[in-house]
Length: 182
Image (tube, rainbow, N blue to C red; front, side):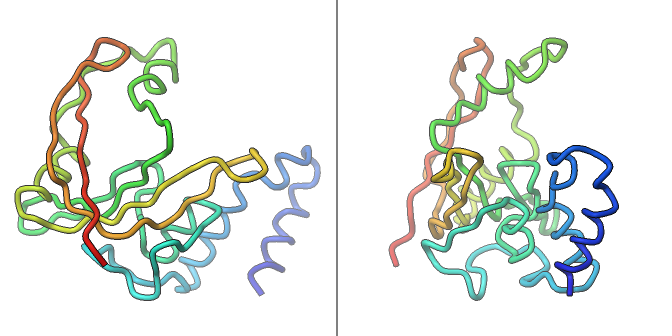
């Protein structure tokens, strides 16, 4: 049913080029499924997500949201706030991802800044202090080189964190996570 509606939407945009006609079908599908109440494992939670197993693979970040693995798809660190304390629920870690380098080169107008202990960084630090599990999803290049794929790696504990100088000379928080056995 929803594929028919997406195809209808694509046909309505056929006046544009091929890229425009298929652009962000992942986000359109995610939005449709959420409107229809078809997303699962909500609300966001700490720890294991029912029906998800280590090694499960996903093509789009939007899929991570639909199945309840990672809700903030525009950010690498997802978190919830419980009684005023932020706890990380999941991180999407990309292979060879130099956050500082990419951030520095995203926009010439946007100046690189020191990272702060807020939002996701604070949630990871609080998760370490309170020994809360964090789901880790590894992002990597897809087999055809035309995008990414995501693999659920399991539950981890934050072991340590520190501040170091990044490529731009600005301070960047680094976190060491250790897999929970089993």
